[in-house]
Amino acid sequence: MTRTSLSRRIGALTLGSATAASLLAGCASGVTPAADAADGAELSGDIVWADYGGPTNESRQIAYFDGFLDDTGVEVVSTSIEDAVYMSMLTGDPGDYDVFQASASEVLENAENIYELPEGVRGDLLPENVQPYYLGGFVFGETQGWLTETFPDGGPQDWVDFFDVDAFPGKRAWPGTPGSFDASYEIALLADGVAPEDLYPLDLERAEAKLDSIRGDLLFYQSYPEVQQLLTSGSVSIAVTVTGQFTALRNAGEDVTVQWNQAFAVPSGFVAPADVRNPDEIEALATWMDDPDNQAVFTERTGYGPVNPEVFDLLDDDVAADLVNSPEHADDVLYWDTEWRAENYELLLNSYTAWLAG
Image (cartoon, rainbow, N blue to C red; front, side, top):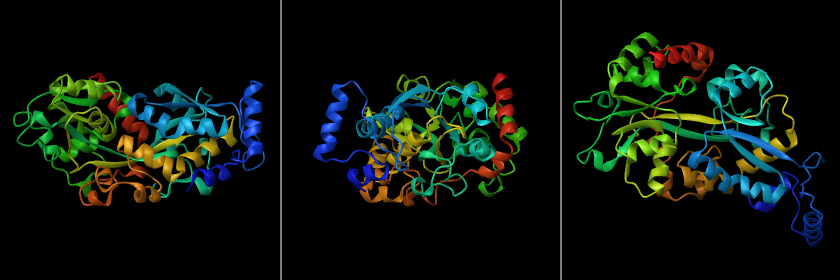
């Protein structure tokens, strides 16, 4: 899809001379240029966007937000997401965000409190049950990785190896906030010998016992970008995190090994509350982020998998090979049971909170 056709989709200003003159006049008068939404309403104001910051947010700024501002006059204002705020908003309480990141399980558990997007801007590579709610969708990998020089003869091949601190010595970077339990229980159970097809329902007591077996070797991080510093400083030898952090290290010139075997392919994205104050702007942004050209830029910068299948037609083969939802990894990666996790989200959150507290 070209930028011109995308602009038509969200009713943005055309490239004709009359529109250019209007833009110039608006700038000269100090009025922010606004685009007409598909229903005839003018786009204006801003969108308060909450995510986890770091290089991934910087990539969103470059791939999406800068161009969206130029095209519509609507500024996306990024802020660091806070667990207490977004979790409260998921249950229908008012909050500070127009758009915030949420896991698929959180979305399914609270769908009645989330804004439903029109069909034309939904990510086709997302699971059908979350497609109506996610804008800015992507697929990330949750796996282990390390600086290649740390294990020159080869690092862990699976989660059993990850727990073998004798064969693969060093601290392990591990998620340390309650809302970011990620694949912690699944990883522990796989390491304890549970087959992937037998993971659910998760045996939390067994998983926590396995985690306790290397608790002294875990270094807990509070934010994803912190993982990069832990690896490059030598504070940890292996990190369990989202694959975008490994991509950021590669982009910074580091030689990083990512273990795709038993990695989890996790659909994610952003949602707006059902009573969002600016639905026209939200739908326009969703359209902009679904554009394959824009999404390809984000994918190339982050290493997160796209949700628009047309993006794969725009990527080099070596870039596509580093995406968790690439066909190349179909036999290696695993998927969460999002339905079970949604039904047991509070159990998982409370259990992991208690386990972190010791």
